[in-house]
Amino acid sequence: MRTILSTAAGVALLLLTAYDVYATVLNTQARYGPVGERLNRNAWRLARFFAFRLPRPRRHRLLNAVGPLLLPLLLVTYIALLVTGFALVYGPRMPEQFHVHEHKGAIDFVDALYFSGITLTTVGYGEIVPASTLMRLSALVESAAGIALISLAIAYLLSVYNALGNKRTVALTLYHQAGEGADAAGYIAHHFVDGRFYGLRSALRTATRDIQGVLESHVEHPVIHYFHPVEVYKSLPRMLFLLLEACAVIRTSLDEERHSEESKHPEVRTLEASARYVLGELVASLDLERRRRRRFDLPDEAAEDERRWRRRFDETLSRLSAEGIATRRDREAGYREYRARRQDWESKLRRLSLHLGYDWDEVTGDADLDYAADEAKEEPEAEPVDSRQ
Image (cartoon, rainbow, N blue to C red; front, side, top):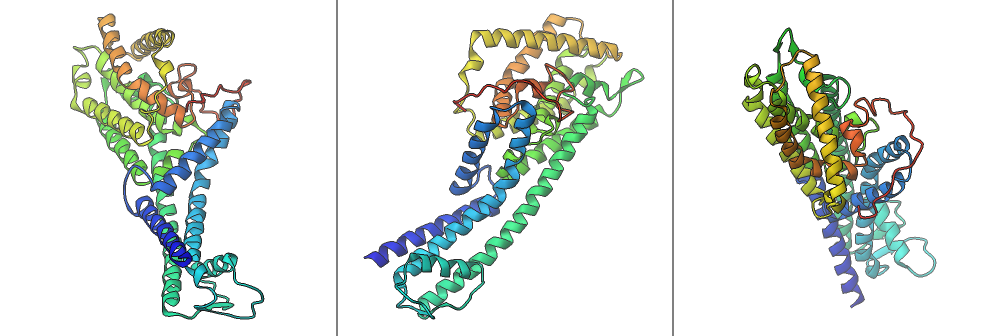
């Protein structure tokens, strides 16, 4: 009975590990397998617990160290699961089905773990040798599993860092087009020269393709969620905010007669729909809708949002006018449309930003459009912690 139970437990552990490797490395989905998913989320929550008790720059530096550590931690976890699983298979059959050389004392589970470890890593010192056909085949399978796991881990590591490089390229492109900040008006004005727009539609088309590519990277490699850039402008929340804000400004703030082609062009609607879809997919994959923060719906919070949106809208119109871009004549109608669009996506993006370790004013630049361009900027007080996250 002991042999049967131990073998069943070992096989179950091996099947769980095999499924998790398949779901994490080989299958393109928005989540890891059960082991990788729990490992990543728990490690991230623990890191956030300590990070949000630090000033902003130190918080970003602490969270920045989490992502690179998750990959080797996941590999070590897989190795430990495989070693333990095979040891549960070997243990009840030692020493009857093994040749044990120069061994004194009784065989215990530590010997099974030792043999399983040197077999998985293909070291094979020869102190313990399988004698039965079943144990020889098991050792052969374990050796093959070890080689396959290491190979898949290397390939996965390379693909993750390649995806991160592409993501940084997209972020830097938007950052420079937006005047090195979170300035949607600056992004629009960047394409306005001598009284007309040049390349704005092409830029919007490229941004649509790029943000969809970033989503695919997050779907294929969910660990990218937890690679936290120290510079806020390289973060996904800033990228999404800039694109959604730019679309809202183009559709609500430009003069309907002089710039009707830009404000009504399909590329604007396509980018807005794509950015909202990316945001929705990320919120769903991280279960942020289920853990929605109720304080965003409080009356005081709504009043503060109203003041902040109004100030942002007025500043945007002033910035566009200063660049020579004709703005909407009916400001109140434009603001009502702008507010409706902000209400449609801001709550989700705000939750995503907080979950990934960024304060909302960092992402939007409401306090300072150039904030976080300088990662060395210090703040005197630690940030409050929301224990419900």
